[in-house]
Length: 406
Image (cartoon, rainbow, N blue to C red; front, top):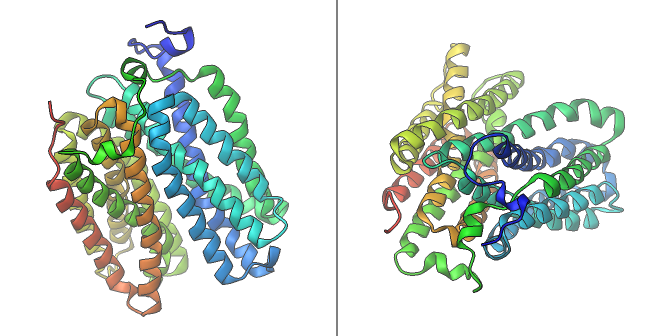
């Protein structure tokens, strides 16, 4: 096969040539993290000012419809990535959601704002599974778990930096500036990716002329593999979004102060970064399945422990840190397990469907927390519900084989 200098740069040596894909995929995931926080950061301003005619109901619609777009984009992109390659798919998805995010800042009313968030979600949803597929194929033999979990630290770094940025930008430049910054950041990334991002070598070696069909991931033995992984992905993102949305409120219901709740949310995400660094290394050493099963099991225990009122603040922060270490990285280990079990030619499709179904969990998690809060039982039942989701994920993964069929 003749390969251009750009595409051949993924070939085996691990020198400088391997650094660009790592950095650029990390940056792509950081942009996803930015989007996780940006709407939440501007919602209080939109609600207080009634900007664009927003009401509480329409703001809820805006938050939900964006996640629906992300889920659809994740499912739809897999066959395209497997057919046309990871490089062009990733670049196109970033260009799409960046342009539409920029356009949100100039929306004339709430309806257009909501429509643009949905369309931007389609591009954003395509970004993560494509980056995951790229990194799993770019990683050195036996190191895909580490490569993928380290890449996903970008997600939480992007989320934390966005929250910090919003503290200054919104009061001084207005809520619109948050979407301008996100859109421009993405657009500036596109030409760098075009120049420096090679094609996945695994894709180049396995690409075939026939069209990849989504049904291939549920054909024969892969049906049960997919069902188990989808259940785990659903529960994993239910936990990620549910905790990020409601942890401060639930801790407030338990009697902790608002400042303590926000500090615990930051602690949760610091734990996420620590967990991502550790989880990949352990997964590569001990195997995908035993690690991800154990991770969800410990996450369930940590979440259940949070239902106990603790008087010692150091103990509380330690428990939340431990929950963050296991909860967030467990979801990424599911993605690493997906990349291990499916052949390269349908890996993008498999990751896209797993991420897309997981995004349904991302909608259910905040809804579940809100319903328990409305019923007045968010504490302690919120933690019981989240612990139960982690147990379901663990049980689902036990049904999945540890290795692909030879």
